[in-house]
Amino acid sequence: GAVVSQHPSRVICKSGTSVKIECRSLDFQATTMFWYRQFPKQSLMLMATSNEGSKATYEQGVEKDKFLINHASLTLSTLTVTSAHPEDSSFYICSARDLRAAMYFGPGTRLTVL
Amino acid sequence: KNEVEQSPQNLTAQEGEFITINCSYSVGISALHWLQQHPGGGIVSLFMLSSGKKKHGRLIATINIQEKHSSLHITASHPRDSAVYICAAYSGGGADGLTFGKGTHLIIQP
Image (cartoon, each protein chain N blue to C red):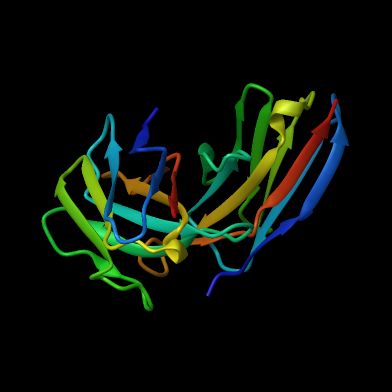
């Protein structure tokens, strides 16, 4: 079946550094990918929609300069957390929609900012 | 706006028990996802279904479109099934079209 991978699965960084998270659709083309954030004991919250070849669409309250999204190909979207701070520590999850509109979720990336 | 309710919120059971987790939604949907999130956070997509029933190993998911209800069943439960189970309803509204339930925290005791 369709698989979505994320890399890295865990990352620990110092405050002020930037962190890049990759989301790949392994055996299908994804024109649209989505990035979510999940705080402890909370549900997934949509951050942004990543469209191949165009600018990402951000949900209200999400800083686009803080969370840079690039969707350079039909199988790869990246989320870069710029100048990360401890409050950015969270679980980041991507999902990818295939051409039939079926949605597949990545395993998530645990970001810890010290 | 779709509202997705899961029950129970927390469930503790003994190994071997048959487990049922419920998900109900308020607006008609075209698909429903069941996700499993392990204690370390990793998410696994279990099922995506739009009608009827799907089975994978000891897991069974059913959906009743008319009643706006889906269930996830686990047969012969095992401690490794301990996780948070999340349903997400796809109704097309919003950017991703998904509304997530708050999750059911399942603990299977040996």
